[in-house]
Image 1 (cartoon, rainbow, N blue to C red):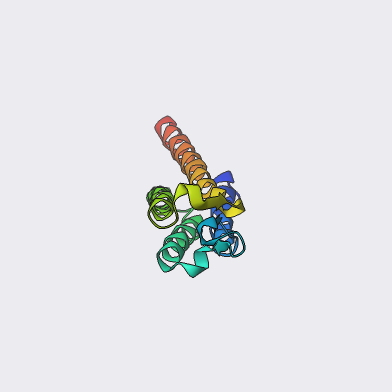
Image 2: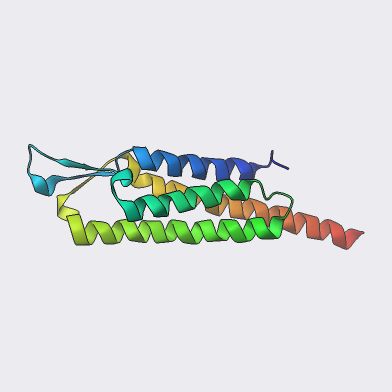
Length: 139
């Protein structure tokens, strides 16, 4: 059923991923005060691929509602990809920009939202699976 709460969580994770592509996630202040470079995901190929992968996996898992086991595996993959995305951002910040030269923008919290929404979706799918299994035991 598409009208379950985990569908909304997966849709929100997808929306957060698409929004992260276009919303700046930081400012590089090391270039000087007059020319602060705005950091966008769409300008960095590895980050763009990682964000797109999480968004696509979250979106595809919405339509696997008839196969909860496969949906759980795909959402678990999205969770792991989200963790990898956060690690990729942290690595890129420490090696290329540096924490002292970085200014946070709105997009910096979107990878965390993607992770949280995928975790909530996984919990919802798991509770549905447990409910179905408990009903099968009663028959």
